[in-house]
Image (cartoon, rainbow, N blue to C red; front, side, top):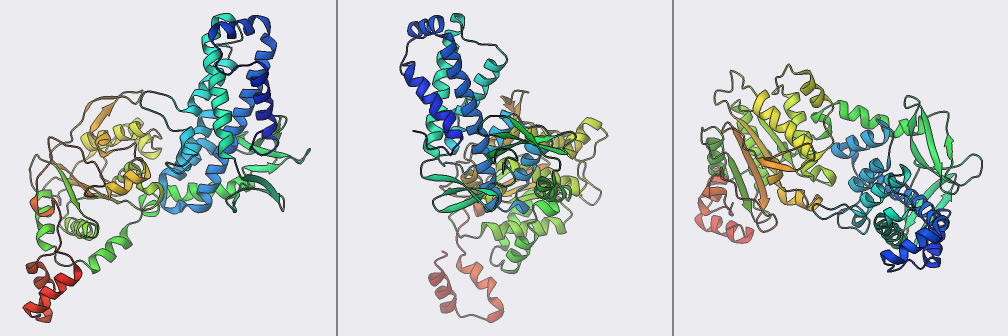
Length: 497
């Protein structure tokens, strides 16, 4: 019996019943070929019900994750989320692959929902396997014939696995209508699915958003019972959701990721790190070809405050800085961080190019992780030209909190930034920026696996960053003329040595 909400559960139950009737559990190729030859209609019916069930499961699952993310998240700080929602649901007509992407970017990493979109390196996720099967079956690249028995066996396994795994996702959940809206209820929490799930005009059953057609003015929804399409005359309820995202993204980095308040706060409480700050500034201003600086420590040692001070002082010395403090949600994600770096550079007019194709990419940033990495490489290698005020000719790029980025999406590592990629997203060779580009990364020691780079600089004062010593404390509170005993007490009670 399916746990999925009706009427989608009808599709799933029908598939399970057909699967059991044809005795497909652990069936071998010879036995399957016999069914192909003797009962092709029944096998085709199984595929049609399975494909229909999985399509609706994909759409509803993606909508639930999207609605939950929008309800709980802070889209004002989530550039990647907003951009990908727009590109996958509004800017194009969504396909199964677009819905898969929505599911992937919105579900919580490590959750039971994420298992459907997770994949081992070089292999497809469960949802990707279903999409591949559906495309092949719909376009008749495979059909219920003996020559396709290997593909059919794999397809049956995929459909059964998707229906079974999805069935587990919906245990102890309810799809409930209230005041004309549909809510997904899980663990007593209500997730408002409007406007992505709406009541059909003709039958009153739930319909799932398909996309905006006719120049993005006509919403279409698909029935969860019959699979038929219903069009709506106006898109107002979708525009209310999408337009604020579009307007916010148009504002650039200053609105999407604004860390100025954090820097101001850190600067107010910055004490005792003048030596470390000066060491970093001197290295950032140098011609040293060891241009990658990792800064690590235990939690609470003041990495963020130190970095804020460095950013402020570099700016005062006319050395441009692109920076990001990892925060909540997908703002942590190394993919989103590249967007911020590029947008910052654009706002600061660091990227100079007359190439129209490149200008288009800067305006409409690529969605694919490896493509946006390659764009950053191009901007750094070919489009950065220092101003006259920047006498060092250097550009400093800072990411604070790599361990937090890893929590957001552990599949990404900062080493990704230092590889070139082909059109298929496969790494082809390592990449190194010029010595004029200084990279600074901070992370909690023991919480992030920082790679070894040939151009990695050693700076003992921040590797690791230790607690304040007696000299630093004395300097920080010198205006109060503290006694030696008082300084020692501050250090002991603060447990910072």
